[in-house]
Image 1 (cartoon, helix red, strand yellow):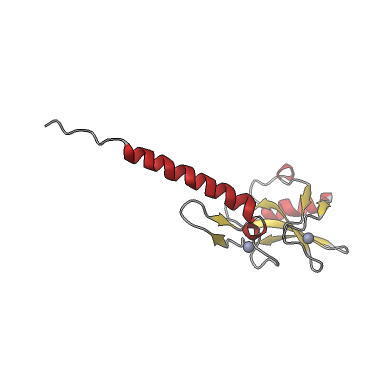
Image 2: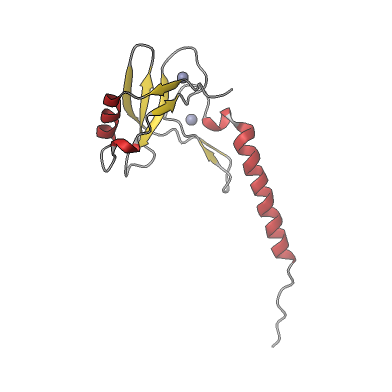
Length: 139
Ligand SMILES: [Zn+2]
Ligand SMILES: [Zn+2]
């Protein structure tokens, strides 16, 4: 399955609301006005797209949430569901309690394939180091 991808052009007042919600040094120029729905393809419910992180609050972000009839900006906690470990882990970039799958479930071949390949590179680099003879102790 893939992300929904429904596009949205943010109205100016939503960008203003986003800047106010995020606070800190957030400026209107930090908010990219063209977004796409990031949750798994759905036939019901709201579309949602990440707009900007809340400065200084780990992972919290302002999201655009919309349907045919309305549009809103909301602060949401991060999902943070993770898979893998030891430097190859992937963390879901959606918001807490989002509908559908986690982002790493939606693109398993894309991300995991690349990470697996990098992991293999690391392993062979380590084995090359291990093959270098230890320095001879001359004393
Ligand atoms: Zn959607
Ligand atoms: Zn998730």
